[in-house]
Structures are given as structure tokens and as C-alpha cells.
Image (cartoon, rainbow, N blue to C red; front, side, top):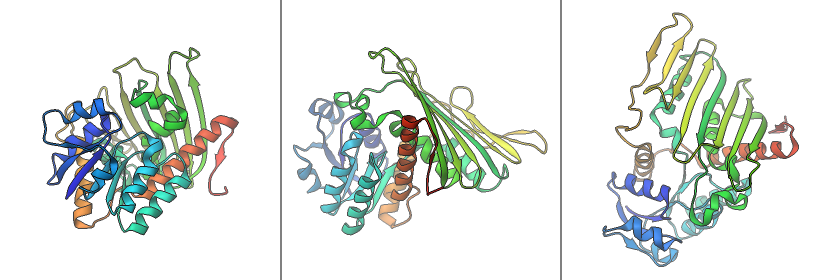
Length: 329
């Protein structure tokens, strides 16, 4: 199948490298930023398209790696052209737009996949599998941390709330999606944020707590508060019979600590900095195989939309300084 990439930033580069590990034919790319587009294409034979319409005419699959506010329009145009779509997270900046995207793809008979890549990181996937298999008993408390520095992008779109919708919708959407994958439907959301008082320093930190219908809870830490070049993630999942732990900076594998014998066992051995396969490659391979073989996606559009709903509830909580209840609870 023929693939065209839309965008030429960091995610477009990751996706391009991942597509090269599949049997798909990468035709070329279309970007709003011609400078970074030329750099990404380099000396390769990839075609640089002058318009989105030209790219759509030459491909079977469109991979959208654009600022979040553009996801809706580019996805719907691709669907109307009969193209399969993979789109970077979040699916959209509000639920109504997400519904329109899903409806357009369904109407056109094409499939929509949202790149919630954390589900494809081996440590996170192994932890999920252990929770699902009941290794740590009944799920109690999930704690997820994702701390980095303020990203820069095309026309500094991350710093524009109208384009990125801020830290909760951008960086924390990863852990919101993962928490929902683990815990199911959310009943209550509460959030708190702290921003640097200096308007020239775009540092931001947020804490989001989720109460699931099952009674379990999640505590999510997210931030664009580290110095440039620093990034850390971690997970801590507690159940009635044990705990699963992993930290990016001090452990190569998750640890499962069971209460019956207090013995630590490495559930999966993964190199800390150089994985055998990039999670982005794992994700693209999963998507491509699902398209070719007509199998189920690990991330449904409805999953992605549910994460947006929770992120919006967290943003509402920031405004009111009160919990937000979902589903009429």
C-alpha cells in the first residue's frame, strides 16, 4: 500500500522511520513548513507535494502528523477521498470534532487510527497485561508521571492554547489514555496546575486525579517544567496483591512486587535507552498489519475520544477548582 505523510516535524520523522520498517511504499510528504520538509526528505527519493490534494491522489494511506487543531480538517478531507487514516494524538480538541472525524471515516468506509503510542511501549504494555491477568489482584491506585520541557514546533503552536489546548490535552493525553485502558470508565475528574509567573518562561505543571466507576483511582503528573533536553516518565500501579513499578531513569524493566513473598521479579527486560524496536515502529507495524489484514486496532477512535473527554473535564476542573463528574454521576 502507498503511504503519504502530512507534516515534517518530530513526529513526522518518527513515523517516517517507522514506515520504513514495513512493506508499505512511502510515496512522499506534504508539509506546511517547506524548510523542515526539505530537511526531512534529504537525499531520499520521496516526493514533496505542493498540495494536500496532490498527495491524496497518489496514496492509499494518509499519516497525519500536524498540530492538533488541524487533525479534524485533514482527516475528514482524507476520508472523503477514500483514504485510510492514521493521525497523531489527540484525535481532536473537542468531542464534537472527534465525532465528526469518526463519522466521516465510517461514512467513507475507511478506518481511523489515533497514535496513542504509549500503549506500544513495552513496559506499559507488559504492566497492562499483568493488570489484566490479575497478577496484582484488584486494581487500586494508578500513578503515572510524564515530565519534559516546553516543546517547540511550527510557529510555536504548542504555546498557543487554541492550537494545542495546553499541557493536559497534549502531553498528558498519553497517560489519560493509558489510565483509561487500565481502569475503564471514569466517574470523577479533578485537576490542579501551576504555571511559571514569568510570562517569558513557558513552564507548566499539572496534576490530574481520576476516580473510576470501579472505585480505583489514578494520579497523573504531567509537566513542561524541566530544562531543555530532559524527559522522564514512570508508572506505579498498586493492586490488592502487589505493585508494578517502572521508572525511565533508573530501571530497565518493570518490577512486580507481590505481597505473598515480597519477591521482586523482572517482568520484561528492555534496554533503558535503546530498545530493540522503537515503540513508534511497533505502533506503525500494528496499524499497517491491521489495515492489510482487516484486524482490530489496539486503539479505537472511541478510545481516543474518551481520552479527550476526560482531558476536557480536567481543564474544566482547572477553571472551577471543583471536581467534574462524568456520565451524570
